[in-house]
Length: 160
Length: 170
Figure 1 (spheres, rainbow over the protein chains, first blue to last red):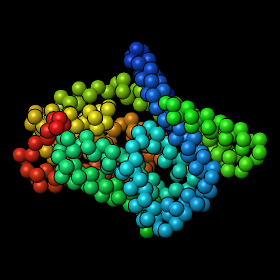
Figure 2: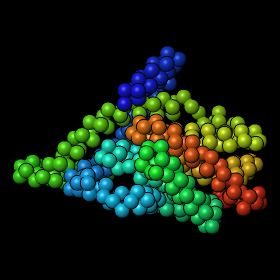
Figure 3: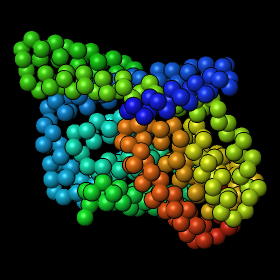
Figure 4: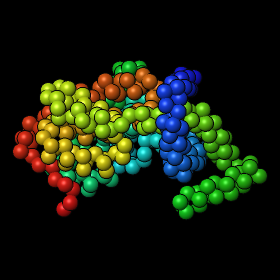
């Protein structure tokens, strides 16, 4: 977290040095974006707080990895495929779950399918590519997400 | 908006009830929310500032100019860069695909652009690295970029260059 603050402060100073107006524009842009996402963000925080208040951490990890990491990854990948949450909300949520012991493999499957597979946006995609191609593209995205999450699992010491 | 307000109000009442009666899951929920808000307050300001700086300094048009000029592997590079710097997600990506196709970009490059616009957007990446760590992000990029290029090439050769991307109006 320290590195993140340092990086943003240093880059902001550099930006200020070169172009004051543009830096102020960046701050405004960041603020607008924040306000736009805030209602949904708070709602997700409240719902997550409640869910994790009623469900113990043990139960959560049992559901996701109790039947093996692969079952958990499959559940997460399917959830990510049908869900339509913006990344600005999904990644903080994933961060919370990671801190509660949910494996990175599972989170990787969730966030990657969330981005690559769009059941909800399928009608839109169909309009441009046709049903067959849209379907193949989404399946390829699903396969990619599974591979990505497995490699993440290997590097984080969760798989193998 | 109304639903969100109902949720906050409901949670407020529930917290009050839990606080007065000492209801265990309720108290845990309050503790959770407190710790989440503290975490978010520590990460969100710099993350949003980085996104704002990125949006203010990088203009899509600069990248767009390069696409199509370069044949070969450089075209993939620019396709991914264009996708990464794009705002608006799929709703902007699809119309852009239609335009790029008409301007003569190859099918494999367009599919790469489409997938990259889902997974390589810089603002999302800033958030990912902030919350899940840089290691997570680096692995994801290193694995997914070759895979999307590969699958795009396979799809392009399967469909043939005659494939038309429609304008989305049916």
